[in-house]
Image 1 (cartoon, one colour):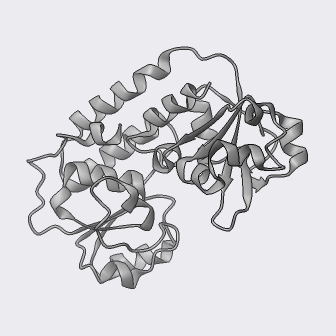
Image 2: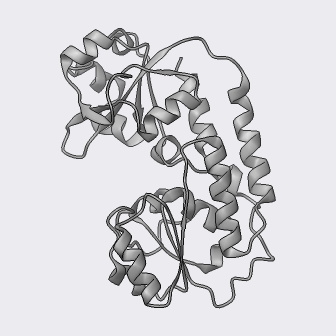
Image 3: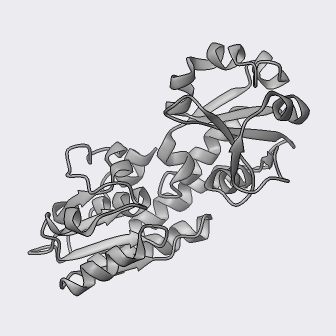
Length: 264
């Protein structure tokens, strides 16, 4: 779906000659790539998962960027969302003469559209086509969905599992899809315990695509002591969505929310 949103959305009027852009944050990077692809010279580590960006130089994780790595790419413009950091790095980049744009990035449909407009303003592109295609991708979410409680499980690289409470991108995505977070009393992420999983007994278990692969697919989820006893795991109600679509709140957000609904 992201590829469909980006296809044919370049802005030929964007003044990219001589401009070298480093984009920090997947949602920022995909919009820059759509509007001014020739000017994009570097992205954060997560953004290389986007189509067409795998070969670009990486500058580290968006929240732990180092000024030296960014400056080594010779940027004239750095665009980042407001969660990127640390803040001192952007002060250092500005002091080095780089044009730095830090854009608000609310986790909502309106927030995505505001980010698109902000990036378009920074690169001198026209966001009209991107916004039209994004709106079209959100149309399926206008249909009602049956009440359901969903548990988002994050599978870390070390095999540790945590679940999302409120105040997270996962919580916002569940809400956008019309699903209730099964852990509303928790804030942020907390370790998953068998007791919590059984007590919650969600209607749907949600993971990122990478997370489900790490766990060995649906059968791997069923084999976990923490999740295997839930009704959702026993009945195979486990859905995985592309990591960036699920958590980045970019152009693929509504497609990700629609995929969550399909899990029901």
